[in-house]
Image 1 (cartoon, one colour):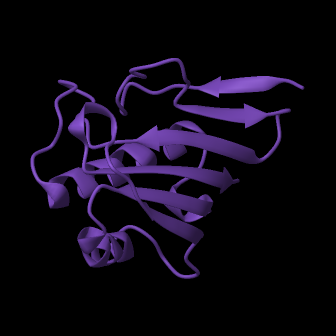
Image 2 (image 1 turned 90 degrees about the vertical axis):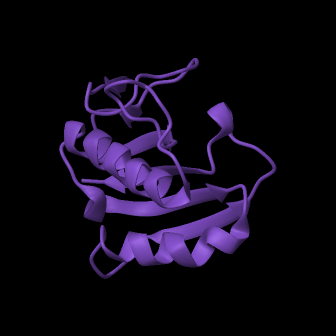
Length: 127
């Protein structure tokens, strides 16, 4: 198995032992690591849930672009929320970033996320 590591300065640098994205065996499938609402310029968390959701989509978009695709190439999206009451807001904002048909998706309530984030998303993309 060969792995191509995807990296862009337009998304936050990894804050742990992971890559922003990985393409396997030179194929068309790309695995995007979880993104939280960090601004890639100053590595500061966006303030508030709406700003964090927007930043997460911007970060995913940057990594998708660096991989040769865009958000509409995502086939599976996982969403982690510290408060599931924000699920409707995620849906509303997601609709402005994706076109139909939408990707398969899971939304999970979690106790906590890195850096005190309110939302995190990871994805699988097929180019």
